[in-house]
Structure formats: C-alpha cells, structure tokens
Length: 328
Image 1 (tube, rainbow, N blue to C red):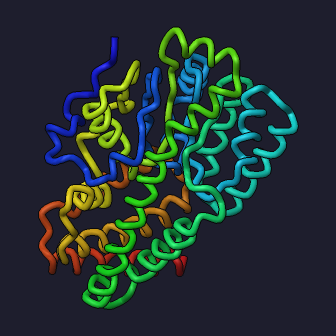
Image 2 (image 1 turned 30 degrees about the vertical axis):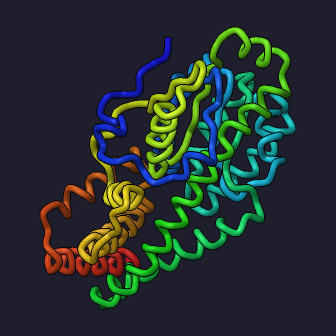
C-alpha cells in the first residue's frame, strides 16, 4: 500500500503544478522515499544523532546532496557506510576543512558519524564536478550576498533584481537535473548490490533523501509526476510539514509556478540577507546553536508587514550592527 504524501504539501493545495519538464524524468519504481529537508549548517539541522543512526539502519539507500562533487565521493561514503577506517580518515579531513571555514562542520560530523558502519547504500543525483551550472550558481550567490550589504538600499535592491532572476533560473535548472538523475542514480546503486536487487523485486526499498530546504520543489515535482504516471510501488513524503517557509523559499516557490519576484520581494530578500549576515556574526561569537531554519523564520517574522521604507530602515540597522561587531 502506497503512503499518501502529507496533506498540505500536495500540489493540488499549493496552486498550479511547478514548472518543470516532467517528460524528461522518471519516477524510480519500488521506492518508498522520505525526504529530509533542512539547512546544512549545524548539528541541530539533522535529527538527533541516535535517531539519525536508527534512520540509516532502517533504510536501504540514502540520497545525498553533493553539488560539485566527483564520483569518488559517492564511492568513499559507501565505504564509510561499510565501516572502512581509511574512508573515516578521509571524511575527517573534510570535517577539518569545514571547521577552518567555520561552516557546516557540526552537520558533517554528525552525518558522517551516523553513516559510518550503518551498511546503507549511498547515491547522489546531484551536479557532478565540472558541470557549468555549479560555478555560475556560486558566483551569482556571492554577488547577491555582496550587493545586499551595499550602503545604498535602493542601489542594492535594483542591482539584486537581475541577479535574483538569474539565481532562480539556475536553481530551477539544478532541481531539474536532480529530478532527471534521481531514478538513474538509485537504479545504479541497486544494480551494484544483489541483496538490494532481490529485495526490490519483492517489495519497495526504503530510501531517505537529505537535501537543503530550498529544494522543497523536489517533493512537489515528484508528487506531481507520480499523479501523472502512477508508478509501481512508489511513495514520497517529506520528513514533516513545512507550514512556515523562509522568504527565499517562498519567492522560489512562486517563481516555479510562473510568478516572477517584484521589487518588493527583492527588497525583502535583500533585507533578509543582511539580517542573515548579522546573525552569522552574532552566532560566530558564541558558536552556532539551534537549527538554521529557526533563524530564517525568525528573520521572516521580524520583517513581516514591513513596507519598502521600513525594510530600508531595518536593513540599515542590521548593517550598523554588523559593523559594530566587527569593531569588537
């Protein structure tokens, strides 16, 4: 019996289907897929370590987000899953790099600890190293982050408008790529294991997918495609309901349904990024704590109901606070 997608995330209740090319991707057969959406920032963005280990033990495949990686990363993580000590040394080096950069270290440490020795197979449908989308996405994101901190608010908003149009398009192209490679990556992973191949012939395999919250569209697209094609033995659910969405997810969700951001949306995004930079500075002083999504929603709540001029004032206040922290 198929599991029904969670009620308020079904496309019929979210407005028109999101605008992907549904003819270019297939649904993996006999796969019971649960998608864990969260930021990849802190330990708190993952289930508790004990719970995460249990999730891996109870699942057959984990689908990871690994943009810009090469195929050796997937091989290495599969070795880590089998308890290979040399693979453990390699991922420890990745964690050390993350600690030096001051980002994602806690997340990586917990994820790799839970994965080690779990026996779960690892698959990734993400953009491989060398794909032209990856550097273009990163460059655009860096430009947006920089322009959002420009001293002149009107200049920042107007300059960011074109950049956000580009970023949203690139985000949708990456999601399309992931959708097109999800079934092949799972099929490839299963084909390497006689045990998974035999099990899949008898019943759906349990797959868990860990992706950033910006990829909520993947659930909507997979659900819509399932409605269109009625695949054999497939179900998909998100890890829990997502009633509250940060501003960037809200704007991206609208874009995927044919609604381009207006200047007020860009002003909200610009102010949000300034507040995000401020909270990063504040958290750096005490160490990152709590799920990053909670911070994003707190920013959204703080800006709720603000008109353009109020956004200007709040953004400028955030810049002053950032400079004050730098001087400490």
